[in-house]
Figure 1 (cartoon, rainbow, N blue to C red):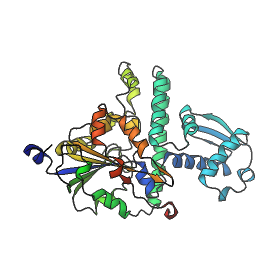
Figure 2 (cartoon, rainbow, N blue to C red; figure 1 turned 90 degrees about the vertical axis):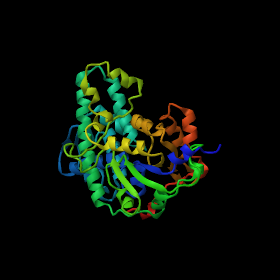
Figure 3 (cartoon, helix red, strand yellow; figure 1 turned 180 degrees about the vertical axis):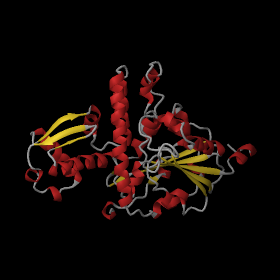
Figure 4 (cartoon, rainbow, N blue to C red; figure 1 turned 45 degrees about the horizontal axis):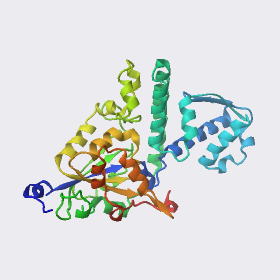
Length: 370
């Protein structure tokens, strides 16, 4: 079908919205997964137990029956992952006694495995649902979430400061590649297009994408939709960590309960405090755009926001830069995840770029990580 004059004018200029998730930071060698954070948390507890009989915070209290160096003689030579495993081995045989632990923390480390940020947020939401009519329990879950956020911020600040970040040339090329006609929704582009403007929608708390934006010679912006490590919630957005699926049937039930504590860590209410979300809407409403996805799990805890982007009529293409490893990749799994953000499956099929046009996300080889 030949494009009309009106279509040619509408799609004369196209933008690109780049979604950045935790996999993007991991690709640069940053240890920012929840697994890294929780391993570091228990490692620090063990270190404190070397010179102290016990440890207590808002999530756990423990004491040690024996000298840590006697029960872990090679302590200084073990990785944080090994010591994390060792902690639970010792607690099972009562060498380290866990006197008290929050149900939130227990749920996290029971399910940790290779869980991503979004999975932890889903655990939090499930606990809210299970306790929705118990006001005191909801207050306690929120206190534990606030404490976890403080620990998380401290961990990420230390990790980011210690890093020696370098840009990845393949990623830079992927950011600025042409928008090909074959990647677009039918009856939109009549030819390949250079990108008019780029907006990075960063779901991480770090500023890793700035490595690339300063090198791109086109109009660009950087929106940290979940806040930043520098944010103080007064002058700029602090860490947004919670749940963002207002399409969930259980969430709708919250609105019929007279308990505002249920909404304390619901993302949409955090978005209303600063201009970030409004800036995103301004961008997606300004011109037709292509979405690039780098290292984002596309999980349900961001469904409301992602649905707003993907089903916008200006969104004419969604290109997945998938993770590839020896013998496999996660492209198909990402298509399962993205389908949950579409009410219209016809729109899904017309917008998501076929795998033959997609490619693996650039990353630093693991052997080169600092």
